[in-house]
Amino acid sequence: MKVLLVSCGDVATEAGLRFHAHGHEVTAWRRQADKLPGLFTGHSVDLLVPAKWPAIDPETDIVVLTPVPVTRDAEGYQRSYLNVAKELATRVAADCPKLRRFIYVSSSAVMGGEAGQWVDESAPLAPTRETSKVLAQTEIALAGSGLPVTILRASGIYGPGRTRLVDIVRSGTAQLPIQSHWTNRIHRDDLAQAIVHVAALGEQAAELYLASDSAPAQLGEVYEFLAKQLDLPVPPGASEAPTRSAADRRLDNARLLASGLQLEYPSYAQGYRHILEGTSTRHQ
Image (cartoon, rainbow, N blue to C red; front, top):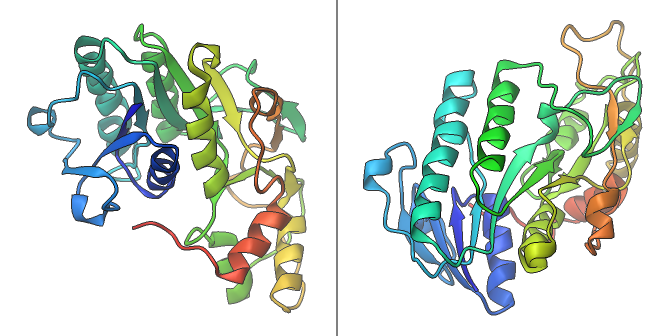
C-alpha cells in the first residue's frame, strides 16, 4: 500500500517504520523533513499554509493524520486540527479514488465520565475545555466527510521521551491525590501499532476505537509504582484537591482488542518498566 503520514511526529514515525517493515511505501509530511527517517519519502510542509501543500499521490491507500497544536489554546487547536482536517479531507476526497482508510488520532479528552465509571465508544462527546471542544468538532467534521474514516481516540500517550509522571516523581513534587483520580494510558508503540492494525482491517475497520491500555489505574497507584521502581520514597499525600479536576473515568478498550490488536504493553507497569530500562528512544 501507499501510506501518507500527515503531521508526522513521534507516534506517526513509529507507525511509519512499522508500515515500511510490512513492505508498504511511506510518504510523510512534517515541518522539517530532515528529521524523518531516510526510509520515508519526506516533504517539508507547513500545514498551516495549505496553498503550499504538495500534491497527494492519487494512488494513496492510507492517510494518517496525527496533528500537533501550533499553540496550546483553542485558536491553535482550530488551526492545527480542525482547519487542517477539513482541508486534507477535501483534497483526499478529490484526489485519492483508491483510498482505503483515513485514520485520525484524536484524544479521549473529548469524553466525559466520573466516579470511576467505565466508558466505551457509545458514550456521547462531552468535551469540557475549549481545546477539547475543537477536538470534538474535528471528529465530527471527519466523520461527516464521506471518506472511510476511523478515529483512534487515544488516552494519555506515554513512552520514550514522554515521561512526565516519571519526572514528577523524580523531582519530588508528586503528591498522592486525596480524591479518586483514575488515569488511562497507552504506550507510544501500542498506539503506533494500532494505526497499522486499523489500516490492515480495510472495510472491517470500525469508525471509532478507544485506544487505551487494559489497565486503568488510580494516579496515586502509578506514583507509588514509579517511586518503587526508582528506589525513591512514596510521595506524600496532597493536602487539598486540585483546582481543576480531570475526568475520573476508566476507558474500555474491548472493541479495539476484539478487532485483533494485541498490546505489547497492556498495563502501565509493563510500559514504564520498559521506559526505565532506557532501551528505546523518542523519534525527533
